[in-house]
Structures are given as structure tokens and as C-alpha cells.
Image (cartoon, rainbow, N blue to C red):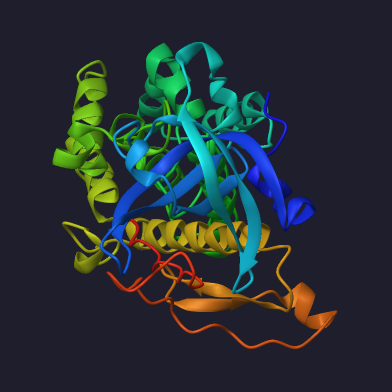
Length: 355
């Protein structure tokens, strides 16, 4: 197990640390002199950290790639309220030195308890066709194991081991509450959509080293994968009504809600519309929670600019109990090419667009 995690940065500010990380992103950029420097994003199970290596770079340029594991020695400091690492030395780790549990974030919730919660919800379905469909997925050992472990996204929301299950359980609870307020909603249909809307993520994403897309996921996307999975299960359920099948398919392909968000169709019946809005709400609330957690050590109530939400965020807990006043940061600007030198304070790169 590692001695230092990225969440420990505050306790090691202005100190030299030695630890291991997974390479989330690797860029080679030029200094003013034309010599290269390394701009890395390093990760472990507690978060991510921007890192720069200025000296002796030629010796290590080809020694590792993205998703490799590194042993790193460097200085932890803070720039614009963000911790960063100036790397002095690094080397690629061998397979026997890697404990994978150190590098991928995981839900702190009890996975089996979350799965039991889903099971309990499904047993309350009154429509036996929909109940049998969801239970067919849950009884599939390969699918159930992957569903317990998969993240719900690469970076945007619930991007951790168990994130898909955590997201769907939260969505089930919201759907159940909303059905009590809107009795015209078909609860079984809505919950079926909630269970299936992201199930294709178990094939779209890979998470052995870091969260990234599989080739199939890149080429098809999770909604196409979900339709394929649905067809396979429906083949085992003779007599499943065609109109109900069409509605389940529509729930899957419309849950992104808008064409510009990658939705092939707009939600066209109440359950589809509700699924879209509750899914969007749950993902955005988790994105906010995660950013507050990542930036808990920052002074003042404002977070840095959140690229996926298009705004900085106000931490109301800090705002109502202020230590000192601060203002929201402007959106980060891309690091200018060929203008940095080791003597200058480096500019942080713009956040990468997320899917």
C-alpha cells in the first residue's frame, strides 16, 4: 500500500514526496528554448494531480506511456489554490510492484447492500414482463459482476468503481419518490429505464488501470450496446409485448434528452422525460459533490471553474461559515505553447471536455 495519496497534499505542502501513481495523461511540450518538458496528470484512488518535469526530460520521454505506473519523487506546492507536483525523478514500475487497488477510486458504500436495494425495488414491480426482464439481467453472473464494479462515466459523474450501481440506486430512489407525486407515471416502466439506461457502460468503459473507453465503446457508444443487450435478454422471454419492448428501447435511446447531448431521439412520453431529467439531476449533483470534495482544502467558498457544468461552484457550507472572502475564478485558459520555462510559474491547462 502507498504511503502517500493525492488527498494528502495539504499535509505535505512544500515538501518533497516519493510515491507511485498511474499516468492519466501525458503531454510533451516545448520550453522557450525549444527543449521538451513533460506535462502529466497523475492519479491514484484519492484523486488526480497535475505534474511537470523540467529537467533531464530526454532520459525519460520514451520510458513510459499513458496508463503506465510510475514511481515519482518531487516537490508538492500550490499554484492558484491547486496543488501540483514538480517532478525531480521518475521510473516506470514493474508489474510485481503494482497494487491496483491503490490507483482506482472506489465507492465507500457497501456494494452488496446497494445490490440488495436494487433487488428489493425490482421485487415490487407489478408488471411481470418488466420484472422478469430486469431480473434476467440481474441473474446473469457476468452482467451482475460488471454492474457492481463499473463506473458510471469516465470523468463526468460517479467516475469510480461501483459508480454505476451507486448512480442507479440513487436514481431508483428519486424515481420512486417522483412517482408518488405524479401517479400517472408507470413506475415499473420508469424503474426499468433507470436500470437499463447506462448498463452498456459495462462494455463501453474499461477500468483495469484508469477509466477509459474500450474500442467497442468508442465505435458504438453505450446506447447501441444497451439495445444489443436488451435484444439478447428479450430472446429469452417469449411473449414479451412488442409495444412494451418499443417503450423500453425509447427509454434507452432518449435518456440523454437532447440531440446535442448525443440523444438519437427526444423523450416522447412521460416516463422517458422523467428519466432524462432525474438522470441529469443525479449526475450533476454528484459532479458538484465530487468537486467540493476534491477542493475541500481550498480557501474561500468558490471552487475553480467546472468545465462540464460551465461555471465555478459556490460551496454553501463554506459560504455560511466563511474564513475569508474570495471570488470565483475565470475559466481556465489553455497553456500557451512554447512560452513556458522552468523559471516561470507554469500555467495550468484547461480542463478536458468530458463525455
